[in-house]
Image (tube, rainbow, N blue to C red; front, top):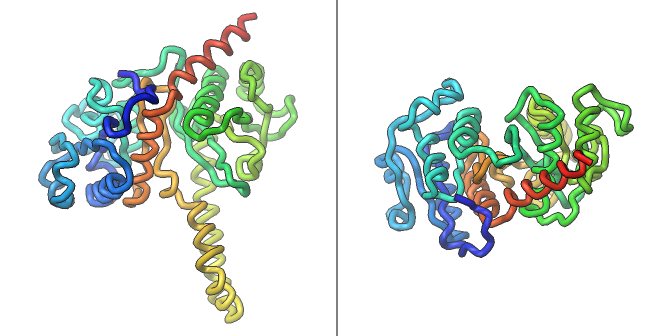
Length: 345
C-alpha cells in the first residue's frame, strides 16, 4: 500500500506500534501513545500481549485504539533474523500490518536489527534502492538540524549505496523537514575532492549527479549547520552516533562536577537552569526526535531508542504520521531516476 498521499485525512492515518519492544516493557510505549492521542488524531494499533496492554491503557482510551494480540517478543539478546522465523512476535505482526495494507506505518523501540530486517524483507525496498538506510537528526549550533545517514543499517557499503543514501536524505529533508534545497555532504577526512578512501572517492563521482551535492564535509560540519544532509556508511555513522551520545553525557557530567566544587558556580548554574540548561538539554535530548526513519523501504518504519521514554514514543509516532502524509518515497524514486539518467550520459 502506498503511503505517499497528502490528501489522506489525518484521522485516517493508522500507525502500528510494537507495544512490547523497548527496555522498559509496554508502560512507556502505551503512555507515549496516549500522549500522542491527546495531541493528534490518528488510529494507533497496539501489537502485543492484550492483557498487559489493557493493564496500562486507561479506560478512556480503550475504544480509541486497536489491539493485535500476540505473546512473543524479540529480546535484545536475540538474533535479528529470529524475528523472521517467529511470526507471532510483536515486531513481525506490527510490520505485517503495514505489508498487508492495514497500517500506514510502524513504530518500534524494540530490537533495532530485528525491526530493520523484518521491515526490509516483509515490506520490501523501493524499486531503485539496493539497501535501506537508517537516518537520524543531529543537533547543530543553528536552528536547523543535520540529517545523517546511514547510522547502522548497512555496515559494509558500496559507492552505489552511498549515492542512494544521498537521494534518500535529500528527499526526506525536502518532504518531511521542509527544506526546499537541502545541501548534501559526503563525510570524509577532508573537504577537498581528493580526500577520502576508495569508497568515498567513488561515491563522490556518483553523488555529483544530485543537484544539491556540496562535496566532502568533515565531522565538525555535522554540528555547525554547513550542510543539511550528511552521507556516510553505516559502520562510520553508528560510531559517530554513539560517540556523540557519549560526548554529550561526558560534558554534562563534567559540568556537574565543576559546579559542585564552587559556590559561585552553583549560584550561576541556578540562574541558568531554567533558560540555558533546559534549552540545551532539549536540543540534545533524543526524545525530542523520537526515532530514526528507515529510508528506502516501500512504506514507513520508525525505529526508536531501546530506552525510549513516553515522550520519545510520542514523537516517534508523530514522525510516522508526518512520513506517511509526505511524498518522500515518491521523491526518492524521482531523484534516483533523474540521477541515473545523468550518470548514463
